[in-house]
Length: 217
Length: 217
DNA sequence: TAGATTGTTAATCGATTAACAATC
DNA sequence: TAGATTGTTAATCGATTAACAATC
Image 1: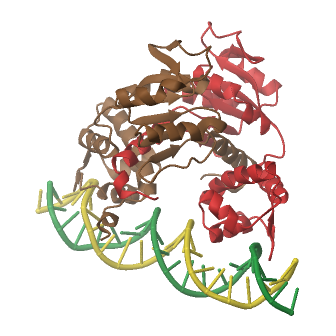
Image 2: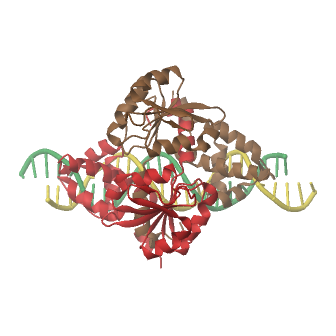
Image 3: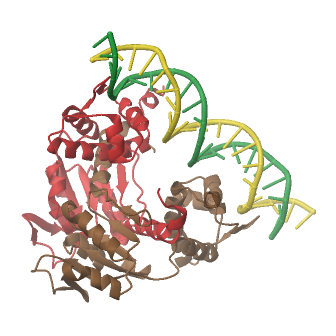
């Protein structure tokens, strides 16, 4: 009955994977082809034990007495994270933040292609951000359906975020990357990843104020 | 000896505070002046028990039989987060992302004032983002020292992030908000808050791929 | 007073760390 | 073979949830 529960990996583990992936990518670029959990620990700051535990949620990628093959592990983690393919995305909200994301080459390199930006501001509609056209948000639903868009990005003010999420859902999008400082209500089969910059900044503020209690942490 | 340890509140608690703060602000704006942990639970998604535990790390803000006074709790949380004052900040990296942050009125409203942007691109130097001038990064250290800047924001490519962090430290900055996809090495008395957008996107990718295992979570 | 809801202790649950046999 | 390091189990630690007496 709760078969799914068995191989359900905890969210805290998942959130560490991209960091492993990043450092493995760096090692790979340096031409290093072998790494131990101890070495990964020094790079990432997680304990070697935790790293071995984390990786073993997905399989035995290492080899006793040797460690992990950098290229192999990098490839495996990419596959686990779903980075072994490409995704079509759109961005609603063509202000600075939307443009920043559209401009960031790193996302495209990782397989996330921004097909179009959308806005309701007539001054922006028709402009291009390195070949990516800004369209009227009225065209959003049709565009998504016609272009096999899987990920919807929201960089609008918070007042408009929920209505955009609703259009996304109506259009069949199952993954939303939300930058508006609001918690969106979505259907059970839609996943949301929030980037709440204000919360991040307030956390920094707290730690800045209380840093003496947290030195070396 | 480990006196500090006593009143050390766990990081996971701290990271929930901004969300409480946000919802309290919304309630306040609606003119609601009383809220129970149960109601906060429905808003935030955390359990009522957890909310009471979290708040009691900092004091007994509630009243039996009544709940919490919205305005009072909002004010207290603001104080705890260090939002009862203003901070001077600078941004290094005047591309789209840096401009987005400089443009975002919400940060200024919360007390974080961007005094200047910095870049090394001569085409950007001298431009203004709503009154905020873009200066040459060569002037960074002097500017920080002369203007009582406490928070340094990094929105450069990852290749330059560490050198900017080094200048920040040399200039006396103790709080860094880092958007570059790199883990910066800083002194023990400097706090860093990272916003690693690529890690966030990769996490979304994972959950999109495995969403059937995570429905209603 | 009766009802509601906190503050707080105790119980549970889950995540991290330690340890070591397996094995390359 | 000897040394190194994984995979995995057991122990520990910390965070969440449950429960309820205190009290407004």
